[in-house]
Image (tube, rainbow, N blue to C red; front, side, top):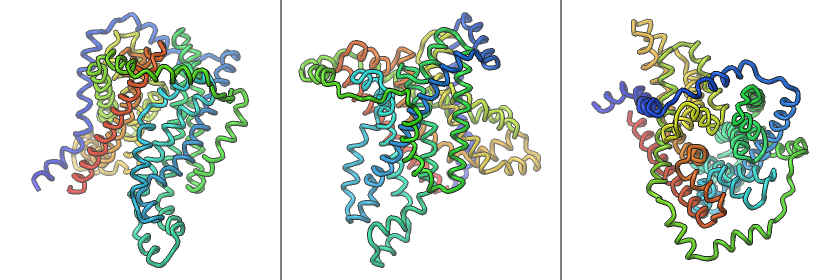
Length: 510
């Protein structure tokens, strides 16, 4: 009982603890900082209110945005349809209903796990080396991990929402498919449709990231504008992207408002609509016999593989990757509640919603390039850039949760004489802390995968080593780096699941 009493007052303080890492990051940036880039950052800020309206620039950006949208929508539709199918096949409940066994679901999950552990950027760079610059490279790079991620979520949802009506239907002699449609589909329609809708926003940001690294679309234009310091052109593209994201979000909300069952049919139809719309996207994918022969030939010699494994100091590289993940995760988790308590009010929620949207809008590699204008490259800078981007996601989650639960608790405590910050700390923030921390453990998994993005910019971690190996066509080293990245991601997912299970059990005890 004493433990429960002690944990309840401390609960809203736990999301604030990761924010203490900002003190250490600030110290490192002050040590490594320089003022040479302040004027450049001022020009960057000025470009936000004075974007370029040159017709030639706008035409090029619109063309890039169209390519990015086509890639995002096609990969989203393909991964949604395949993910739902594989998710059902990966569900123990599905196999119990159909055949009375569980083992096929376990085997399929184990086989699919490595595919989702490899980041879409790594898939893109690997496919780019073999197939060259082609629209299908970016689509497949996103669709492969997204399909398996979707399958994992669908399988977990199916296994977690086991309806008590299922044994009743089975006892009444209903067919397996009748049991599925009657006992599983109704309770799963809402969470699955919400997740499918959320993945479109993720696919759009992934398509943008692939463009930043040279796979075409708006991301390529934004990267070139930033590197050439054409901030007005950069902000023209960012504003276009922001409008597209808002329109897509409103469209999906409208569809869910009409009927949640519409999301999957829309996802099924979207690749064909996007294919007809993106006529300028090269989607001719030939089988590159010579390129595959070169790759396979280099991998045949096993002695080269052993020597390649010794070329890298793995403890240092893995340590740098984990350290970037921890820094970014602490920044992303701790920054939103800290800023909420700096100015706790309804107006603050609206302004912070805009700020978090801006952080989600700017890709993490571009944020890292901006920070490099103020400080020397370091693990702290790489972690800060990645943390700010994911802080935009966590900030949106926190604000949405507070808006859904309401601020009545803060108003009640304030009416009783409590200070404003204390009222918000032990009111709305306490109400959403458990859900927020549960999502934060999942976000750490995503951040670990995204270190591949930031490592290629910051010159550290597995991402940087992968770029070096790809540039020299050292395929054995590429294979080792991809395998280590996959193992790290799977270990991170396992740890996150254990933390979520432990947290949920403690929450149930409270």
